[in-house]
Length: 533
Ligand code: KIV
Ligand code: ZN
Image (cartoon, rainbow, N blue to C red; front, side, top):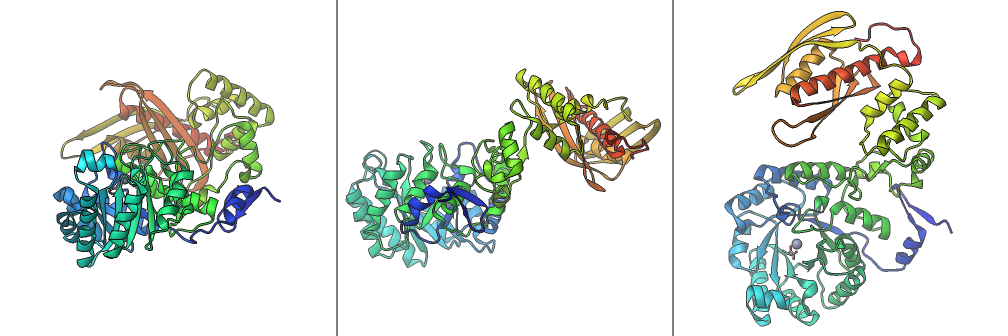
């Protein structure tokens, strides 16, 4: 038996043992995804999205292939209702759903937004009934029935959640589920509201509930113990045909099950399909992170910056000869790229590979010298990025000599109702060149002026600004990645530290340009020197 199994057409490599365990279990062929980024995701502490941003995210979710978009909780506020209405009116393919409590007023608010469906919830656990709602089980059942009936009478698709379902007595859950099915509920969701289930329990719990439910079941799992994705997958094993998720695992407290992980897990472990176009996941993740202001942790599965990043020498060597040695799936299937990071654990292969990206070919001894210096640098506790690596490599091959490009003069004007304008004089290989340009801000104007002075072929591929210290006189670090639109292989990095973000950016640009100049001349390959730009 081959212990690694490649799922056909997916670029996913899983354990054959794992696959065999589940291959005998009856599971649905496809699972629907309800994305609640715009509702539960927006309940992430300190997140509030404007209507415009909600529409942008909804459009991205629609293109991603989400089946149901929970757009918000219209009764919450006028702004929220406006956002839900705009999402519902955006002509998306996905079903647009609004959250409602079990009350006609909430359902009316949803109806006013022209949504396709409502997700009605009512808490059913003892603690919620006694301490929060202060109603009996019978009252709760009747409220649920009235609300579902109201939604159905108004032509809505109705999904119902017994909130805190996993802490509700099973018998009472069955009572509520029976009663709401009698009035035509379309789907029933099982929320693990405070994330207290384990996968084994979740599978059994869902399976038990399913015995008394004829409509499709969903699961909605929170991540309080870091189990939300595992519990969601376990819920599917128990018979759920829909999973509630959020992009990047955003959500109340520790968040909800991350869509990216659920979708890839369903595919990899159970061979279950969803309608999600996995290649768009990284893009949507970045969009949501930008608009919510919640950064994705670098070590987050599937979409984190490190998810397809390799540092250790052994791993890099393995991945370079066959990526499946250390990657259970191809990065491109989730819209990511593989990266090799050079650091304390790197070896010659990683360094060689990284320098090749910048067109630098070093001999073995030079590479060994670079690796030794990199390790020393990293062991001193300092972070090493490509700019430092290139500086080390150039030093080893003896090429960081006199810079060809020197900054002679620089001015920038900016202000209110004034287009930021910058002027530079650069001494380029002995010849002074002056250029001015404008931009959206002083940094943009300065970068444009520098490009105008050197060459319109220069492309600013990346710009990174980090504050090193706090306060208005903080030190900042600027890193720029430059390319040349005539030659995709040409790339360089420049880096500078200073207290003024504009002049520091200009210094980083000049450093990057000098490196690009050297690369363009091909000096490192021993070619004859001529003017690069
Ligand atoms: O976590 C939860 O219980 C919810 C309900 C609204 C279903 O988000
Ligand atoms: Zn929730």
